[in-house]
Image (tube, rainbow, N blue to C red; front, side, top):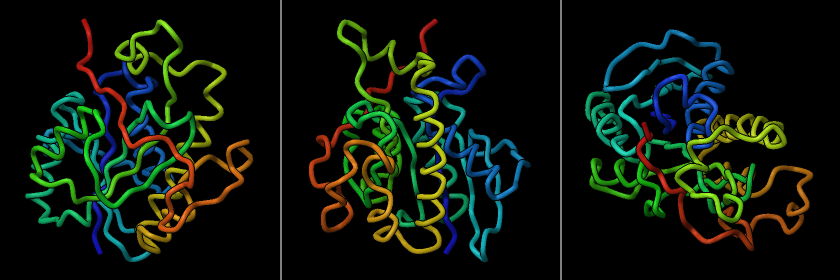
Length: 221
């Protein structure tokens, strides 16, 4: 089955390594993993197509800025004649601890404006998504500033491992299906102190954080 895998973020080099762009980071790492690099412009995005183990994959990075991500995603879905179940949207989440992953088959935006835009333009919440935990900002730090700031040096190794796990999770969705991927990848990274209870039935961690998304904001300046 063909898949459309979308990473959410803001375009421009000034946002490359910011917390809000972790969706772009995952899609870029996925492209490297499947050894494709011929990004082209279309659907108000950068996108490419590849075959992986007999499956057709389309990777998409909307270039509309976060709050208008749905415009690009809807264009691609219509042009490629994709069904909601063939979509996987990857984005940051303030309310997941740093490095934790959460795959879900459907759901609301949880306050994430990029995801809200996608839902509004598709007219449905019934599509898979992969959330990457970026953690809450320190006391006194505005979430809007926090998501648009680069990861701290002490966070980078955790983020790099999370991005690689997210790539594996994406490929597991394609190869084995969403439910199996959820059971394997939902929750903290291996070796994390929180990794011990194992996933609850259906792949959701037994004591995960509430279902919300990171606050997406337009770039400032």
